[in-house]
Image 1 (cartoon, rainbow, N blue to C red):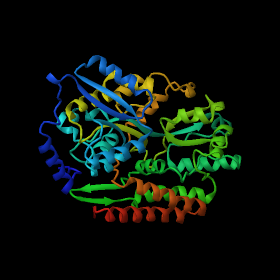
Image 2 (image 1 turned 90 degrees about the vertical axis):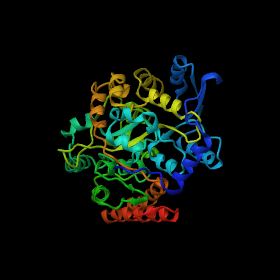
Image 3 (image 1 turned 135 degrees about the vertical axis):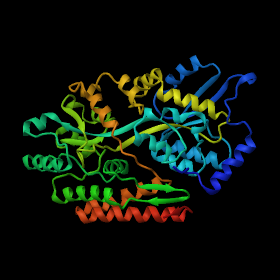
Image 4 (image 1 turned 45 degrees about the vertical axis):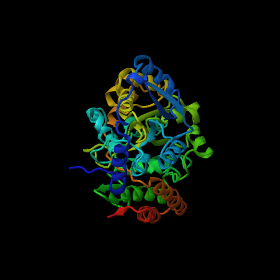
Length: 433
């Protein structure tokens, strides 16, 4: 039996709120006119997709209130929840923010409104991100960021290299690239993006948090993450992989001039490459991530968001109906792809909506076929209520490791992340096993 993440006082507060609100979670409408839902989101042009819903559903009307981004929206929501009023009916929530919102009693459990019926539309790893391994469903997945390996096909051909399918092969190719030209690297270890490293650890089988009843566990310093850290620390110490942070002017230039021959990124990479390395359009190709176990292919997730319903909504059933439509209806998903540029989390709808490759990858007609196969292998991963602390610890500790350029420093960074994250949870009042 899977457990619910809501525990102790949070559960009692939720029950009391429902008793006080009476039928507040019902669809509503009727003699009072249409149900009006307020939706906080930052995805571009989302209001155009919502217009499709409003035209076909006069009894449930949705208004998008554009937000500045994921972090500002979550901060506003938490403020409203604490104040007891001011929250929207729906919010766009990144997967890693869901545990924080749940622990603050900000999100409604959508399992009461039939959300479980669409579970099979999503990869296990994506669905786990909105359930947190519990019986509850805290959001409907919208888009995902399955990780892939992007590489300069022209340089691979010039050097006679084969695309690596295992991490051992990746290391060999990295050595060959750097030996052929000391200015070139197959990739970089970036100490400024914890989401990237989380996805790498996720692929190896890591799940940094867990919950059993009222007790949390923090499992950062376990074999999967230590394996990943040791692997990259070894390559950095050897000098065959770069260790400059991503998204810096120097890194951007490397993408464009061929010094960065590959990039372990996510399905949304074509947009970044097109913006930072426009001169290389048509020279890159995408492949699955190298594997730790070729007999059990897996990948991690880097990015992605969901549509959640807040506990302050007086129309939770109607909001769930809209959120389900937005992320699983064929017309809605196609509109999201066309107007917002997302990679849909719904596997079947992604396949139907993405029939042509990104313009930057026009040389690879099967781009989205590769992406679909990869997306189906996203490993389960549970986020915790203090993701921000763990991510900040990553940035601090791995910055030191990147400067030290030793494998031992990378492993020490993992241990430090474990301690900092665990200590913070205990200080915040969580029971930690």
